Amino acid sequence: MKKFLISFIVIIIFGLISYYFLYQPSQKSANEAVSGNNTEPPKTNTENSLATTSIPISTLTINGTSTKSVTINDGDSVTIFWSSKNADEYPIFLTTTGCVDSKMNRKDFLYGKLSAGGSDKFTIGGAQSADKVIGCDFAFTYIAKNTATGEQASDTVRIKVSR
Image 1: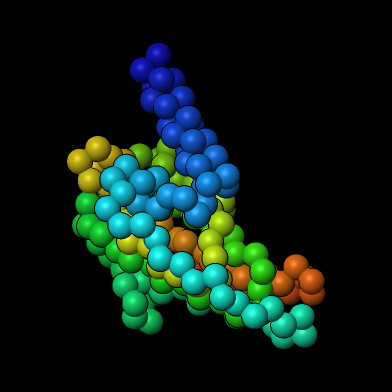
Image 2 (image 1 turned 60 degrees about the vertical axis):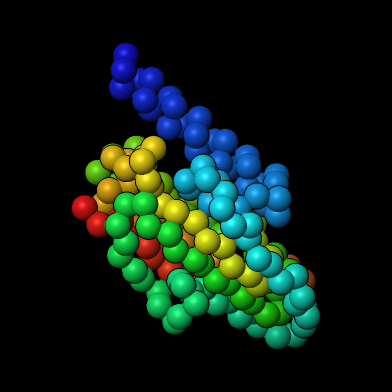
């Protein structure tokens, strides 16, 4: 019964996170979904000239460098920066693998909808969920879509929580 309750709670949490980012993406920070502690609102740049004849460009980085992969300790903060050109839709997906708590593993979970460019600082894990994120490899994939042409580009960063 205890395993069922834990599984049920995890499913409810992921459902709430999905609802939160699908229907209120510009009002709250990813920080709240990951750590429950919003210390800095996301910064966004909504200027993006959509050229229907150009191929979209998508860029996603960690901590403002060209870094595509980092290993952090439980409770550390990171800042993800994103930008795009020639696009008008900007979903971001999350795939989580390698977690000690296998219920945390997810594939291609729609994490939210972003803007053409911006940044967001958030904390992974912390006191409330330390045992759940140890060993997790979070792969964020930002997609820039041009709905007029059907073209898209994507970029991925990985954040691994050390064991």
